[in-house]
Each structure stands twice: as C-alpha cells, then as structure tokens.
Amino acid sequence: MDSFDITADFFHQQIAQVSLSADSVAEMAEAAAPLMAGAMMAERRVYSIGAGIDAHIANTFCHIIREGLDTERPNLPITPLTSVGAEPTDAAAHWIAREIRTLGHPGDVAIVWGANLTTNGIDSIHSALTQREMTSFWIGANSPSHSLPFADTSPSVRLGLCTMTAVAMARIVEGVLFDH
Image 1 (cartoon, rainbow, N blue to C red):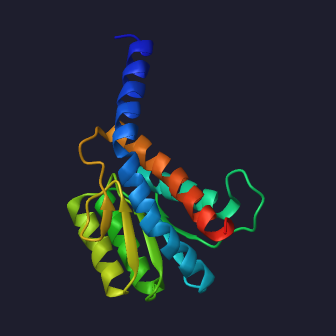
Image 2: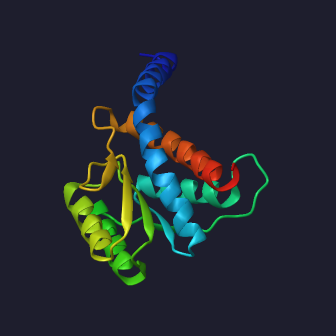
C-alpha cells in the first residue's frame, strides 16, 4: 500500500465516522456549552483535562476557548489540567485526579479528553470529579458521566473525532456567550 492509499483510506474512515457522529457531537456540545458558559460567568472554573496524546487536544481546546476561532471577542477563562510526559498513562491520570481534589470546587466544569485513558485512569479521574462535585463531560472515553466514547473507531480515527469535537464545542460555547 503506498502513501496515497494509506492517506485516502484514513480520510474515508474519518469522513464516514464524522457523518455518523455529528448528532452525538452536537448533543454533547449542546449539553456542555451552556454549563461551561454559566460556570465562566459565575466565576467558576472550567478545566480541559487530558493525559498523553489527549493532553494535546485538551491544550488545543483551551487555546480555542481562550482566543476564539475567527471572531474578535474577549478571552475566556479556562484552565488546562494536562500531563503529557507521564508514563504509564495511569500515572498521569492519578496525578490529574490529585490536582482535581486540590483545585476543584462544586460548580466547576471539566471537559475530559480521554481517548487514551485506561479504565483505571477513567475511574481515578471520575472519582475525583465526583468527590469535588464537579460536572464533567468525557470525550473519547466511556464514563459514568456524560460521555461520547467513539467506541467503534480505530485509535487514529478517534483522535481525529476528538479534535473535531473540540473545535465544534468551542464554536458552540462562543455562540452561547456571544450570539444572543
């Protein structure tokens, strides 16, 4: 298989999954955006959480929320809570859970990018979020909270779907806050 075939196959998989996932992404964004916007306006914290490769998506989401995509608007408050270099990923998840227990408050909102998390990592972070009475939305992982797991996809397609979800959610948050 040459590079064109590999690239074309990846894009075809991505396009197929994007079209199948659009409703689910819209539902997740519709649920998360008003809560994120409300937390920001009430001076609560919004966290974008990720470990390993998911940390990059979490940081991208933070940047898009802070700076905006293509409209001039004020910067929005969001806090990245990420661990890029911890190995194994469970160690990063336990560190993130400890940070949540230290920093989190009731009424805070967490967007957890979890395509790379193990069940133990999910349980650890979910337990900390629950203990601190935070609302959480999970993208790329299946959790007891609101989740959008993209379970029937390959890891590379799931990574692309999570990144597109970050952009879509940021646009919807902007719409909630600025398009009255």
